[in-house]
Image (cartoon, rainbow, N blue to C red):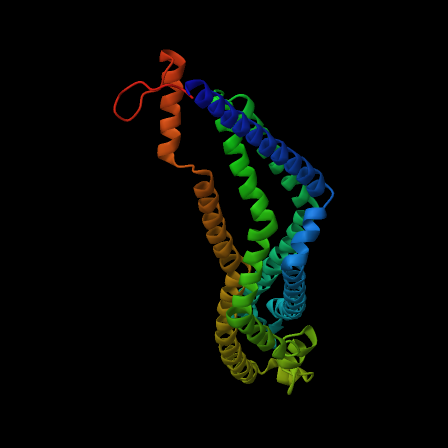
Length: 344
């Protein structure tokens, strides 16, 4: 009876060993094939079929449209800026000269800030497009490397179960590579997609409204429009020498003209300051806050989920370090009750 029981136990153990060996062989084959498929971009095609291609195309369309709007706004602001630069060097007066640069300096500063804001926004949008193109070119390589390290980790667990340090290093490497790969394939595209959704609802209407306002004063502040504004109507520089010598009359006319220009530019400065603030807020949310917020949130959530799946925590890491030291110096680890236990 005892012999029969022993034989049955041996058969069961042998069956378990065979089953485990078959499972390990299947896992090895699947991971090896997956590494080759990832390197050949076949896995990318699968991701595209499940909807990632639609998201990628939508992101490219959104970034292209936003960049085109930024370029159009940049050109409008460049015209306005060049016109105001003409005013800074203009003079009015008869027998004396009065610089106009002081009354347009604030307006010029606001336009210059708006110009730099649009330039920075367009640059960020272009860099984002280039980043997505770069990601599309290298993501499958990261996936191949991730699968390769995962295969190495499994083989070390199977062949060298006591190599705790090597196993832990490979596990940390796999975790890092999985997070990076997930970021390239999903987190970055999804964060831009989510940012584009909020942008269409919040920041883009604000940017379009502001750039339309600047476009309305484009002709008014173009170099030609500025010349008409400054020197339209009665010419302050009279050709009659007697009139030119009448300083009191000329001074009064210059004073009236200067006061009118001062009031006009003060009103425009107030309007442009509001437009500039709106433009800065729009591009700040559109190009930085929205994408980075979703990127950080998705990254943290993804990393937490992966750590949970791998069973990695700070407490577990400390426990593994203690077990490694106990095995190294004492030969046996200690359980929670302080008793030595056998190493399986």
